[in-house]
Image (cartoon, rainbow, N blue to C red; front, side, top):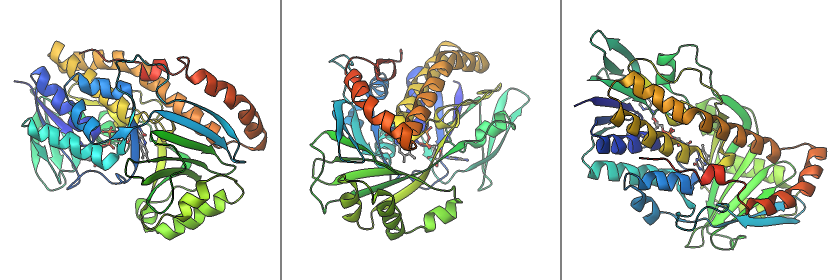
Length: 391
Ligand SMILES: Cc1cc2nc3c(=O)[nH]c(=O)nc-3n(C[C@H](O)[C@H](O)[C@H](O)COP(=O)(O)OP(=O)(O)OC[C@H]3O[C@@H](n4cnc5c(N)ncnc54)[C@H](O)[C@@H]3O)c2cc1C
């Protein structure tokens, strides 16, 4: 039986392992951290395209059971003016599962639990540092603890700062910092500004803000705050209070609920850098391939990174099921995925620019947005969330 080494036990890693099992390929997952990745404190939305891809391998149940619905989105300008409201999922067919909100940590946990339940080995504390293709077309992975593992192929599901990407192509482009910190917070000490199942998105003058309410009334919020790229250690050193003060300064000129939500939040504030990765010219070699954020990464604005990683996982496993020669399977996977994922990255980059405009663009946006919000319900986003992978 073909054996795949999967580097990275995030979303793509766990889903690929389950999909490969269904395809008859043995898989072992190697994750750098003892549990999950860093910046897993953020929350995310998984849309119908991601959920339906999980359904292809029967793994959607645990995600549905540990998340809550995200049905609508309403938009406010920084003046507090209501710009419109639309269904979050566009006009996707009624049989599809609606978008769901959950923390990244929960998504990691339920996917890992499901993979383990299916008997897939997940090794923690295994940070890939090098790999080589040995003469008989097998690949040997070396980890920072000195251990090694050997397989017929290696799948880099190791996220935006992928080591496997560099092993495939040392000249691969680096992720681009979007100039934004994504700050997330959770508070029970304020009445939710949004109706249940609804996201309130606020185009503030100096920061974009979004929030929703969990079923127990806790407010989950995020803000895109312009700021410099820091080292990982410097970012971690910024305290919750410092983030609170920074955001309150950015939100000071707005007349929206955002500042009150931030003020009501205690220690539960987490921040990360927002990156994107538009085009990675080389996705594979004879024995290695990259998927998910390792291959392409959209800025968080389109909220599609997890769903794209899930779609990639199912498609790659299907290609390895149908084509036993790895390089051919990798080529078929790239053929099926590249145009779509690059379109999503570009779409998200446009959303990032729209969320942080100058004064003139802000004026145009506030006039134009109510019209485009109206169009959101007529299928404008169907190419994104109405897409279905085939197994
Ligand atoms: C603040 C924020 C909000 C977001 N919101 C959304 C959203 O609403 N909807 C959405 O769909 N997406 C969202 N995303 C994006 C989404 O989280 C990512 O696109 C998704 O996690 C990508 O999955 P992945 O498996 O490719 O990578 P990751 O989830 O990053 O997993 C990579 C894994 O590889 C491990 N790893 C890294 N290097 C090594 C190594 N050398 N050896 C072994 N293991 C390694 C990491 O520890 C990690 O566990 C958001 C991201 C952020 C930061």
